[in-house]
Image 1 (cartoon, rainbow, N blue to C red):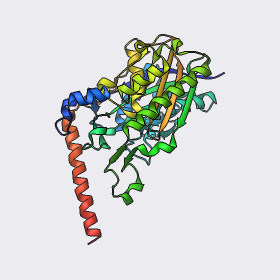
Image 2: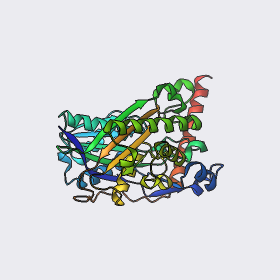
Image 3: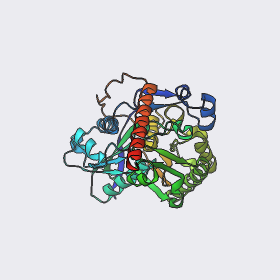
Image 4: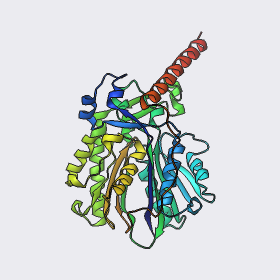
Length: 370
C-alpha cells in the first residue's frame, strides 16, 4: 500500500513584528484586553507578496527533504489571500522553485487550506497520480484586514509554511482524517470585499469589511474540532493518550484550551504558537508543526493530532504518523529581502491605501448618481 510520508518541512515568518502596544496606537484596545481574550502578544506583518513567503518556505522544505525543485511533481497552494486568482498562485511558486513538470493548483478553505491540501496531496500520492507533493499554507491577511475593527484586527498575522510529501511503503503521513463544513454557518465569518459579489452591497473589491460572530465561532470551532478529532482517533484505533503531540489551529488560546479539555489531552502535549504569531489562517497549523519539529518535540515514529477550522465554516482533523527522521537532510539559503520598515509603519501604509480607496469609491459613486 502506498503512503505519503512527510519528508521535508520549512517555514517563513516575515521579520516585522506587530505588538499589542502597536495596535493600541490606532485601536481602542490595550495589551491586557487582547491577551486576556486571545492569548496573543504579537503577530507578523509581511513586506513581500504571499508567493515570496511561500517560495522561501517551499525551498526550505525541499532542502530539508534532500530534494530539488525538479523532483516535485505536484504543488498545492493553500490560501484565502492569494496574490492572484488568474493565473493561480501555485504556478508562481512552481516557476520559482523550478518544478518544471509539476501540476499546480490553489486550495481555499480559509484557515484549513493547508490541512485540506494535505489530504489532497496524500490522496494523489496514494492513487499514483503524484510521487512527490509540495503542500503550502500561506497568508497575507494584513492586506485584507479591516484595521478599524478591533475584533478582528488583533487576531491575524502573515506567514507561510510548507511540507514535502513523498511516496513511501512505510506507514507514515496521514493515517486518519476528517473533513467537514458547517455551511449553514458560513455567514458568521465573512470578509466582504474579497470577491466580486460585494459591489452590489456597497463594498468595492479590495475594500474589506469583516463579519465575525466570535461567540458562535467559538461554539462551532470547539465542538467541531473536538468531534472530528475523536472520530479520527477512533478510526485509527487509538486514544488521546497514545498521541505524542497535539498541534491545533491557533485561532485563539481559549478555543485551543476548550478543545484540549473536551479531548482530555495532556496540556504538556500541546504545541502553542498563538502568543507570538497570532492566527495566520492557513499558515497557522503548518508553522506550528514545523516549529514543534525544530524545537525537538517530534519523536521519531510519533503520533500527531492536528485539528483545525476556518471560514465556511470548514473543519478538519488529521492524525499523522511521523517517520524516523526529525532533522533536515540539508538547509536552504533562501531568505526574504530585508525589511526597512517596522510592522506598524507597514500597517499604517495599508490603512492609508484603504482610506484612499474608500475616498475614490465615494467620488465614483457621487459622479455615477449625479
